[in-house]
Amino acid sequence: MIDFAIRGNNVLTPTGIRPAVVLVKDGRIADVLSEVPAGFDADVIDLQDSVLMPGVIDPHVHINEPGRTDWEGFDTATKAAIAGGITTLVDMPLNASPVTTTANALDRKLAATSGQLHTNCGFWGGLVPGNTGEIERLIEKGVLGFKAFLTHSGIDEFPNVTEADLHKAMPIIARHGLPLLVHCELSTDETLATGDVRSYANYLASRPNAWEDTAIALMIRLCEQYNCRTHIVHLSSASAIEPIAEAKRKGLPLTVETGQHYLFFNAETIPDGQTQFKCAPPIRENENNDRLWAALRAGIIDFVATDHSPAPPELKQRQSGNFMTAWGGIASLQLALPVLWTAARQRGCTVDDVARWLSEKPARLAGVSTRKGTIETGYDADMVVWNPEKSFTVSEDRLYHKHKMTPYLNEELYGVVEQTYLGGVPVFSQGATTKLNAGKLILRDGND
Ligand SMILES: [Zn+2]
Picture (spheres, rainbow, N blue to C red):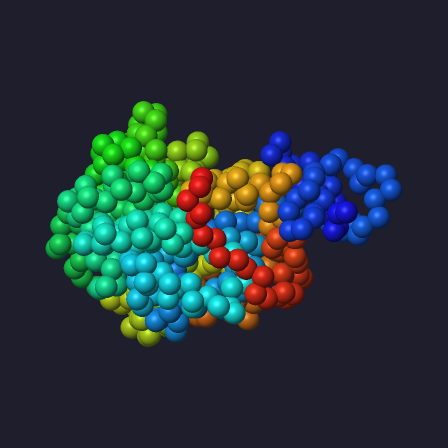
């Protein structure tokens, strides 16, 4: 007995967009057919021309709870997620207090989700100097992989690793087949930050491409040495694309993400003092970003993730506009799909491309690609219904994020999320949440 069916003219199937009927039973996709079967007696929801796509999977989100819930918490972040069509996210191990670098801290993180998990949520463990003894304990508890920094993370309790630390950790992580996610910036010169602190150009000059390129060269070398799945988060430097392409041609287990903001904004149009644009690595020039687009379209960059990392307005130095001391992090979780689609459609990309970059490929990094990221028989019925032709203007009152400060405010974006299904349950519909607490913890069972 099927629970219900969804029929639409634009269903994103593994063979592309086509008219289809998706049958849902017990939270899963029971079948994908071309027509409603004769004698079908359950409800049929007719989407007409709206797109039915696998739910968005964002593997790069900073939720900050417990300990820094005044920055962002599970309740607000996961409400924002379902409002944005995000059916799975993976939380980063820093900004919360304690940071997720021990099994004990992961227990506290899991406890903090209680009663406020509105989308599915997995966890990255943190790799810091001295915690190699915790790696396997964190794996046993179900982390999906690890995250490390090569430069100061902004959080003193989450220090960056050195190459010596990586030599200890990568063989262990490789043995378990999990990915190591790395923030790739290695400072090559400490004297670059000079001049007007409100100037975006000065901020950009203080974190040059060379920082990323040097770090990525190191990670490619270690990826090859240990055959450890290595994932470069938020690539911004286009001059690292060729070495990455070369490493991929050699067959190294290397993957790369970039962020929506690197594809949507350009340094040339960021006004001075507008610290809502501050992130690290920084948003670079138009010419650089065109090359990121080309690499994304060519599959050298695998996918796009938000790196949603908000902070209270005081920490963003909203009053002073000081780029040098402002918290680096862009709030954008709820807007992941419309921001990327708005930029992608202008470049002639398709809804299929967006589904690959926001659902299919990130599912692989998170290790959930046998259950999520595709509309196919047997997969979880995590889906988003959206209208690519409709636009809206970003306003504070429609954002569920804890802090409304975002560089996307007042932007007109294409792609209106109409409905979000989590395990076959409509959790967000026509501008309002319809079911809370339907999210599940995603913990790796160790049997992949
Ligand atoms: Zn991040």
